[in-house]
Length: 238
Image 1 (cartoon, rainbow, N blue to C red):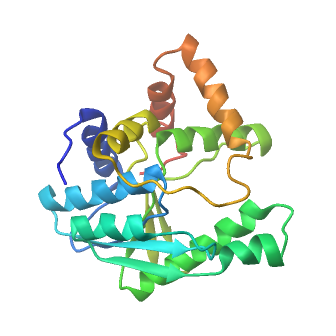
Image 2 (cartoon, helix red, strand yellow):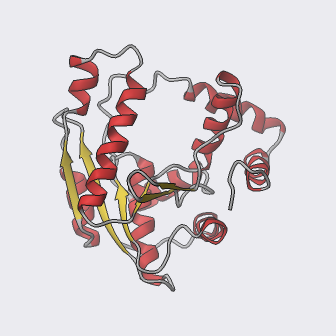
């Protein structure tokens, strides 16, 4: 697969790594691949990164089979094309949350189960870190959600050590804008499979996307300004 040199991708990844030491020598990183555009881009990034990185690290890609009968063959081909180890972890998380438990707030339980299963699979495969595909827009939307509905300033962190699992969670795309990811996916033709979740698209997160888009019309550098505020605050300690 060809490599794309885009400063809005690699410079921002390099800056995040310099700020938070996301990838270090000897790391074995489990890369979560759901089949969405963000995680597909993350797999591409981590595979390319390990080729030119001054530190030596390895990656293993993990997909959680949610139990919906989703066709994962495009992801199998994608990882085979890049010659990266690929593991599918079978689960019944989807049917348990929506059919058995019939949760009134399914996203919370689903996220908890997915996190635990992914971390356990990573440990089983000998990984010391887990990489997720959250990007800058995700961080800003989460920040606005927490401020608006929870009265607190909080968002997803670039790096978190989980002492109960003895594993470190990293988000290498945390400085990268969603529009950059869209460009990468379209130019490389990365695989994107449809999300079968019944709750997909019905959350408050889309409202926050709309708020940011409206706000950006009046402040074209909004995302970078908010990123600067996060970098200069104690929300993201270094």
